Image (cartoon, rainbow, N blue to C red; front, top):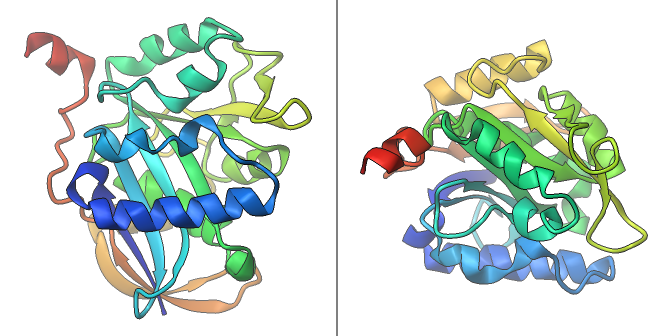
Length: 244
């Protein structure tokens, strides 16, 4: 069995440290020393939410992802990573900010557990499952060519208004990244029927133990705890912030 839990970064610093150490190992294994989204200042950002995957005994971290919400105390990682390449990135965030926009970033899984589908299935599924708790109508991500295809299964479509038809060279000059958007995260437009069903079930029952199919159709027992205790769906909507 594996455990998948979600929390606000500022409320669980020790768990953030687990995430940071695991992410650093994975980046190092592919020759990347640093990327914008791996800057550890996010651990102090109230607009950063973490999804952590651990072994049943919590002694080993298998993977993780974060959602950064526009309106926290930092720009979104994509703004820092690619805003200087195309100011249209800033316009994109503003365009969707009033109704809540967040970025899925820092997604990784351990090399040893790649066959489980932690990064390609469960972390994206969990990120969309908690989006309603934190008030996101729109979600975006910066994907590799491989993960762009996976993201489309969850309704993320290439945003061609920025970069070169949606693409940038990031985090290195020989690596291509594509901006993708899920413009209707609430109702999961364009997502597959299976993912829509599973995500809505996790929204209805964020704490559950269930059997799931992994990347190779193997059965995996998962202990979900996706209830973010202090989440407020109106907290980061710009209309609310401006009134405050």
